[in-house]
Each structure stands twice: as structure tokens, then as C-alpha cells.
Image (cartoon, rainbow, N blue to C red; front, side):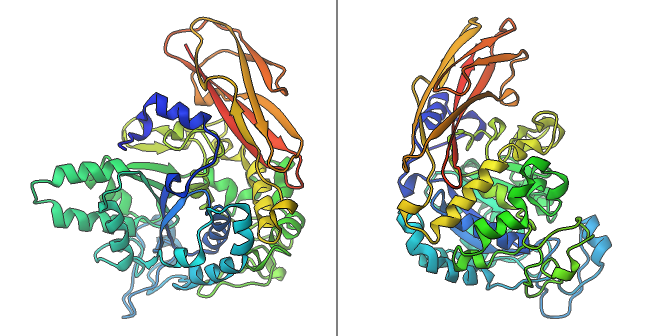
Length: 496
């Protein structure tokens, strides 16, 4: 399968849109996670485990970043290449290193709740399987990519395998271990007759999703030596799930991240895995880090504002795996369409790069492409938290939507169109429908009037003459009335 990221054949793309979200394990997106282990990585990792049935985890790799590195044990001093950490920390022999056992510790807790999770979906991987995927990558210093490590060799092996299915490389910290894997491949093959063919094959299957540049290895090496590797660059949208969330998330949904909701619906009384989740004022402290978020005496008037006990701290890396969760939006190989991991547009100067920022705004906001899904995302996590302790009958599960029409409709010059969908709920819950227009995903410049937006069958009217080669994206959103409402979607694309 030779998928071209933004040029997936239209037939395949719209089949993805209209297929119910039921998969065999082999059909799930493949992914490798690299992480520097900050407390927000830990919280992202816990949430990720609750979604481990939604993608095939091929690797879990300890790596370093501008914020966290182990040092070489020889007293060697290091000065960051990144302006912010250079200014904050100066020369260091090591920096806030959380060690290389925290993933194993969380998997011990995951193993205890796995029997419950498996009741809800047989696709959850076992703890032993996930343990077998853990490797230590390049961790001595920020941006260190001079030496092969077991982590870089593990990534290298997967990049070189015969499986042409795309592999999503998540960079929760720096990209250095990924960069080292690629450099090792280049060093060993660049002088061979098959180099260009091999380079093309690896570039076509590799997709990097990075949260910021947390070292300089993408800019200094990957971008220049592997210019055709696709990258989704999230520099702004992740902020609504990061430390500064109170200044980004609308007041109307902040309760979902505040201590009362977090404590009652996610953290407490939901099993040993969620007991490990970091929150404000919880009395916890991460080994190797000086963070004070858990100190209940220091949660007021801090760097990020004032918080209450058990308030959400940060999961800045969660968009990287939320992007892979198939909720029906069909954006996996089309980051410009928008989904739970944000919306990104192709760079005007680097064709292999999709980025956020001012060119990827929704409703004139740089954060809204991620914010618009947060209520559904947080309710979904609360439902999955219940999966850790409840059997299938006593927990909520997502509705499944089926379009009663084609997901790709050529309307020509017509200014009216019917939209039809139906859904079932595995728990027998009442379902609520909502059709809405997603203007930023298409290029229609007029207004869309939606009639019967809350019914299975809706109608739209357009107010502007249709030009050639355009598209209008209509979303049907279905939410159940379970104790933690779960939401799924389907997309109808009208072309003209």
C-alpha cells in the first residue's frame, strides 16, 4: 500500500469515511511513541493506554528533549541549542531526568485493569506485548544523535521492514532518536546502488507527528536529509491541553478539566492505572524533577495561574495519538480535514510539512482546531476510565454511525442537497444528531443554511453561486445520553 498522505486515492479516502469504526488489529494505524517522560508525558501516556485498542503500538521509546536529559555520567556539561532552555538552565550535566522505568511502572498498573478493558474491546494489547516494545533511545543529552541505541535501532528495524503500511512516529519530546535511526540507515546505505529506492520507500511510509521542536534534530538533519518524510508539526494547537489550558479553553467547558470532575470521573475510584495520574495538589512528586504541581500549598498564583486540588495539569502530547483515533472524521491521511488531533495545512514552502498556526485557524482562532473537540474528548476519557473498573453492561460505549448516502457527492451547480445518516448505540442509549458545516476543511465562500440539523435527515441550502473545483464539508455528529456521553462523527463532502 503506497499512500501519499495528502493524495490518498479519493475512492479509498471516502471508503474510510463511510466504513463503521470496527477493525481487526491488523487494520489499525501503526505507531511508535518517543517520549522524554515529563509529568505531562506521563499523563498523556495514561490516557494513551486507555486508547491502545485504537492503534497498533509498534514501539515505546525513551528519548531526551530540551527539557529532560540524563547526562553521560562523566560530568560532561551541556548547553542547550534552544534559546529558551539555554536561558533558563544554562550549562548542565543532566536535566530533570525522570529515569527509564516509569513506562514499565505504568504498564504494571495497566496489567491490573486489563481484564476489565478487554471486556470492552478485545483489541486492547496485553501488558506483556507493550513491555516487549519498550526500548531506551538517545537520552544522554538534548539532541544527541551521534550513536546508535537500542531505541534508535528498534525504530530503524521497523522503518526497514517490508511492511509498507505507514508508520506514525510520535515525538513527545525531541526528534533525536528518530533522527538517529534515519541517520544510521543513511550511513549504511547511502553509497549503495539501491539507496534512492530505499530512501523513497522509507520516506513514503514515515509520518512524524511532533509537538513543537524540542531539540534541533528535525531542522538540522531530518528536514535536509529526508525532505520527503511527512511531518505534522503542532506548535500551537496542543496548548489547550498543556500547562496553559486555563487561558485557552473556553469557560463553558473548563469544568471538565477542574478538580471536581477530574477527581470524581477520571482519577479516583477508577483503578490503579488512573491512581497514577498527576493532578494539581495531589501530593505526588516525579522522581528526578523539581516540579511542584503536586504540592497543595503551592497551587495558587503560580506560573500558569491559580488551581484547585485535582485540577488537570497538562497532557501536551495527547494530540499526537488522538490524531490516530478513528472517530469517523476520515482525517488520518488528510491532516487538513481536521480531527481529534487538530487540523493542519500544507506548508507553502515545504511540501512534506503540515503545520498549524495562522494558516490553520478555525473560527479565527489558532487553538480552536483542537479546542472544538475537547468536550467530546474529555467525556470519552471519562467513559473509558469507567472501563477500567466496570463490566460492559455498566459502562458507556460509542455510537456507530452509518451514512445513508455516499460520503462524496458531486452536486454540480445545485444549491440544495439532502443529507442522510443513521446510528446505533451498543448500550441502547438515546442518540442525538447534529449536522454542522465545517467551513475551514473545504473552500466554499458562501453561507450554508441547515434545515432539520438535529434529525437523521437534514437539508442544506447554499447562498452563493458555485465555482469549479470546490468542496463543502458537512459533519454529522451523534452523541449518546450515557453517564459520560460519547460522540462519533461522519463526514459528507460535497464537490462542485
